[in-house]
View 1 (tube, rainbow, N blue to C red):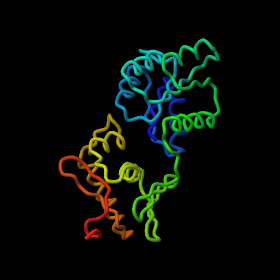
View 2: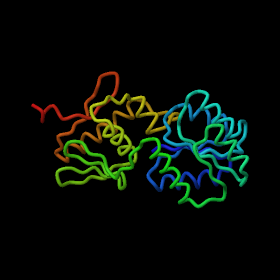
View 3: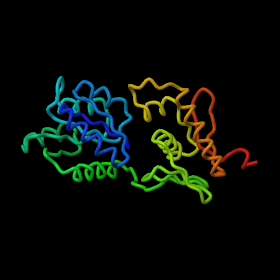
View 4: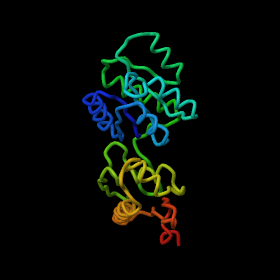
Length: 228
């Protein structure tokens, strides 16, 4: 999952980011409401952790604008106030859940998982296609009795491909979801990692292959050589 963390307290924001990364989630951090709205509208996030009291535009207004724009990304709001009125205001604005500071990290993670389930995301330990398996817990690609570790970017690219076998994933999607919307990554960055993954599939002697769809992107399919 990719999580957007919106928190103006830098140390807390970084701590939240580490908590998410410990669960193999990708975490992006912004510190004000305008940046929060702009990032949220990219549509790349599975969940947004949004503090109420942030500069420029408060959390209530951010989530209200999101819902006005038909953005349905799940939002967990954070507040330092244990005030029922604030909770009602946040939920009425369109938040999906509410958590009062200070909180136990385990509770926040449980709420993130619960929201994911409500959104229809099936929580799995691995993805499978043909004769390969991608472990979502230890970043390994397995096949034909062999196992290879994947780097973070290799893993995210393979996860996107294996989540929808046969479906073309545009290069732009890889760049935004793996490197981030604000990164300087270009098509050749994606091409390099696709090359790494092809070599690993070959090492595993897998029937799976990554096909290039010229000028568009890539898809996971049964290797033509095997099919023939």
